[in-house]
Length: 193
Image (cartoon, rainbow, N blue to C red; front, side, top):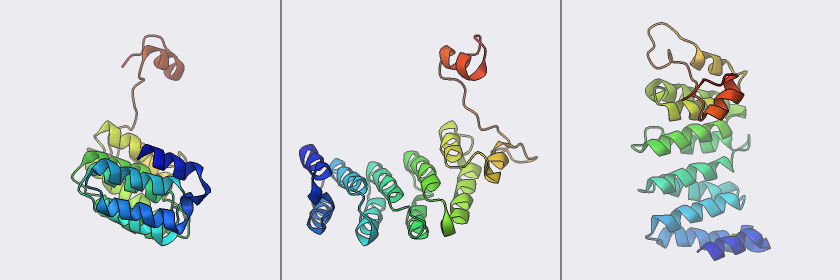
């Protein structure tokens, strides 16, 4: 499996219709979720566009295994051109309330890639909803903030402390990961986790 992926990535035939068709067939027949996740990741990494990418993203997002859904979100980022952004946004928003946190967190990261053009407003609204629901979770805050531009009005809004809002009233900040990092980022030796 790994060798086939490497050969596809290195070879010129990787994006060919036959290669993509073969990968989609493997995805449909694979019982092992690791295989399905790797197929989705390979199609995304090959830079496949258009209907082929849409179909594998749609199938991956419907998969029972969270790791396959995460790879489908990552693959959708490859189709994030302004022309296709709205179409891919509609696909990925289907997992906004996924039961698995890791899938929802990846969605927050992916929304940052799908912004732009017509998809901008909807992506920002989805990020705001996610921040409202799960903004108290530090990992989700990081994912939401990483998807915003620092000069974006939403960034300032998520960092503000509006009255009566428990989730958005919290500052979106992460503590330094080590004393060395604290010295570098905070300018003090005594700052710790």
